[in-house]
Each structure stands twice: as structure tokens, then as C-alpha cells.
Length: 516
Image 1 (tube, rainbow, N blue to C red):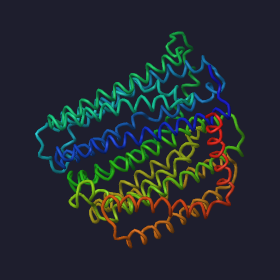
Image 2 (tube, rainbow, N blue to C red):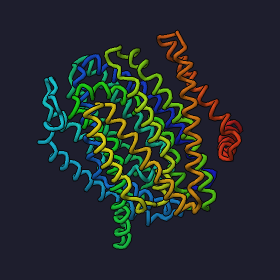
Image 3 (cartoon, rainbow, N blue to C red):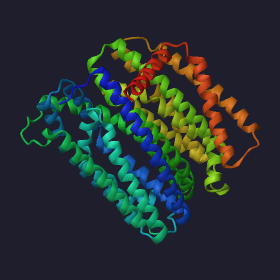
């Protein structure tokens, strides 16, 4: 079985990220076409139901309790050491845990059914039964838990591009069939059934591929996980569940609160924005997730100084990329919605800015979250996300009364910015890098200042432009990229992490050229 060197780690990161980059662009185009057909064929109420039930099932996934992160963290070292017996032990434990989790989520979802009438303020005027729709969403959410554990070993060996390609084929088929069914039948139930089938195929085929690549995981002769190890895993899980609940609440309650206090139609309008944003963030997450297994391997083999150096390189990369995306969302999302659907579907500019801030804050915390999980820092600061989520709900419930959708989104931005985002780097620097956090906070503020300057210049230039339509939209997008990227280069090219990151990228390109 292969062992992972520093060279292969860089190579695998590049392959994983490249495949994710290309596949997510293709998926985005398909999902955009499917979404357009959905809006044209069905009513806004269907959009609201789609967004609401997606959020509800996201919140129910807290039953996963962080077991996935805890187990994948445990896999990094035996994979680095090529310890097959230990890998088998963890995989069998993982299998049992996830089957149990799938059952728990199914039961919780069923228990929630009688309370749906309190969550949906105005029952939408659609022909389908709301409970039937909810049950299909629930099945789609739980079905993957019975197979997904096998994906972890492929990811652990830094071959995530394989699961990415399988997912791409499944999503491609799903969207093509859904588009055809919507145009021919206008049947929302069939639309959801196709989603369930393709979710099943995605996970089932990935599981079979894992069996073929790593046949030892099918071996029924394995050591049971020791009581001491099981105890340690569940100690980590207890800590992770608090972190997980905090993250899910901050991401999953917005639509629920808006539905209950404002209305399901407003959820539908907001979901047009969040659908586009989620597609972009999924694409970016897939790109950056290509780093996760490599960081996990790094944290089992390299010294603290090297880890900190890589940390700041990835931090710079996330700030640049998410900075460009955030400015584009703030300044161009309304223009995009007008071109796509018309003036009746746009929201206030201030809401666009908050959506942009949310994606930016959530995106740049990737480096903290990844290093925290792959270093096993599960117990430290475990109550911070829970406190953050409680504050988020309280502020949301207060502000929604006066500010509507804006108030709910503002609550999420504030709690993320001043609580969760600031605490993880403190843990990493104190307990792992063993250096002062001062550098991180100053760097964060420096990059944020560059972002604000970039936003102001981009807004001034775009507001001065008279060209509209698709050509004007494309030109404005190019201007955002050029101005933001240029300013980040001008203000960071003398930094150590910029020089190191540039060398890594240059070496990857040169190796590809030399191979050709």
C-alpha cells in the first residue's frame, strides 16, 4: 500500500483541487440551468419549501456528532505509517457508528413531522402534500449515511479526486433527468425521487470503488477497537458535537426563522441568492478541501514551524480567493438576478452585502477549521461555538422583529466575526504552534483592510459604468477580479508567505510542463 511523501502530498493536493475546480464549474452550470427551469415551471412557494426543508435537514445532521471528523483524524497516522490492521479497526468502527447515525437522523426527522405546521408560517398553495415532500427530503438526507463511511479511506489516502468524479457523474445525471421531468411532467415529487436515486448511486458506487482500491476493508478478520480507544474517540466526539451544533445552528436556522416570522415566499426569494452562493462555496470548498488530507498528513510528520508556515500560506490564499468572491457577490448578485429572473426577484443591496460578508467570514476560517480538526484539537474551546449559536438565535429573534431578513443575516455575521472566527486561531497558536496569536490577528486585520479598500474602489468603478446587460455584467466581474487581485498582490508581495506560496505554485507548474 502506498505511503505518502512530501512530494506526493503536494501532487495529490494539486490533483484533488484541480479535479474539484473543473467538476464544480460543470456542476454549477448544470444546477443553474436546472434551477432556472425549476423557477419557470414551478412557483416561488416551491423554492421556499426547497430552501426550508434543506435547512431543517441540515440542522438534524447534528446527530452525526462529529464522529466523521474524529475517525478521519484517527486514520491519518495509520495511513501515514501504512498500518493496515489499525485502518481496518477504525473503518469497522466507523461503519457501525454511521449506520447508527443514519437511523438516529431518520427517527429525529420523523419526530419533527408534527411540528412542521409551527415552522411554516403560511402553508403554501401547492398541490402536493407538505408531509410527503418532507419525507422525501428526509430519505435523501439519511440514505448516504449507510455508505459514506467508505469515502473516508479514499480521502485519507489523498485520492479525493476519485470521489469527486463519481459525485460529478451522479449530479450530472440527476440534473439532466430532473430538467427533462420538469419540462415534461411539471411534477415536483418525481423531481425529488430522482434526487434520492442519484444520491444513493453516488454513495454506493464510491463505496464499491473503495472496496476495489482497498480490499482489506472488506476483511471480516479485524481487531475490535479497544475500550480505551473507543473512550478517547467519544471524548473527542463530545467536544465536536458542541462545535458541530454551533456551526449548524449558525448556518441552518436562518431560513427557519425567516419562514416563521416573515414568510415562506421570502425564503424562496432568498434561496435564489443562496443557491448561487452555495454553488460557488461548494466549488471553493471542494478546491480547498483538496488540502485537508495533505494537512492531516503534514500534521503527523512535520515540525511545528513548518506547520505554521503552511498555515499562513493557506490563510493568504483563502483571503485572496474569498475576498474576490465576496466583493463580486456584494456588487453583482442583484444584477445577476435581474438578468436571470427579472426585477421582481431582487433583494435590497444591504442584504447582498451581508450575504457577501457571511461567505467571506465562513470561507477564510477554513484554514483554522482544517488545522484544528487535523491536529485533534477537539476538546479545547468546545463550548465557544455553542455559546455563539445561542447568541446568534437570540439576536436573530430580536432583530427579525424590526429588520426582517436583514436582521437575521446581520446576527449571523456578528456572531461569526466576533466569536467563532477569533477563537480557533488562539487555540492553534497556543497549543500547537506554541507562538503568539498577535501575528494572526494583525494579519487578519491587514487582509481585511485590503478587502475594504478593494470593495470601495470596485464599487466606485462599477457605479460609474453605463454598460449593462450580459456584456456589462461580465466586464464588471472582470474588473472586480483584476482590482482585488492586483491590490492583494501590491500589498502582500513582500510577505514571506506570498513568496513561499508563489514558489510552490511555480514548482507545480514547472513539473507539469517538464512532464509534457
